[in-house]
Image (cartoon, rainbow, N blue to C red; front, side, top):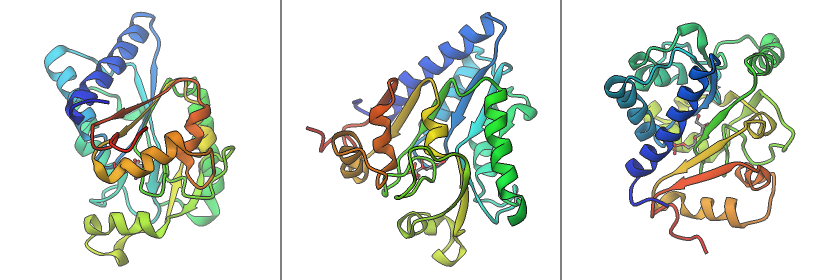
Length: 244
Ligand code: F6R
């Protein structure tokens, strides 16, 4: 629990920088699973600062994002492709070929093959060394809404009404929010060697408490993290305020 999100982001960015540098020293890649939304922004700002001011290179980094809205072109202002480039990739020396997000425009008939290929690409990269997570008000990690099974893998999902309502302001109204997305599954996420879940503010306090202290249930996919041996929650005081 940190005094501020910036303090938490600095601590986590130092850890990830150490992973990237130690892999580079061995001549190996670091494979990072990344998230979108408001939560990761201070972390991404700190990674950019480490690159620009302290010479941290992302030349050996391969990334896989958790999810993407279905029905959005890459250059849609609210696509996760746009979000990630605007807030992180455009400011780093990462190779464009090393950036992976699910496609938002894959045809219905191609979704299953596309999702299987995403899983294969993660495996072929050597698996996720690190996975960054936020948490939604439904308890989702990625877009694993209530009912997502622990053994789920990358697939198309129907977004929960709560999740769509939370996205509505950014889309200029609920009617513009996509109904479906492609997300890594719970099993994909849990396969990561190291997981960090970030949450800021009072509004996340009750779901953070349920995920950490409540029963393990497919109604709160973040609760599956209780069984992952190397997960850390990075919280500010607001998000931690209801913890026992
Ligand atoms: C984002 C994602 C989601 C968000 C969650 C929290 O790629 O998969 O699980 O992490 O909805 O969103 P924010 O950070 O906007 O509160």
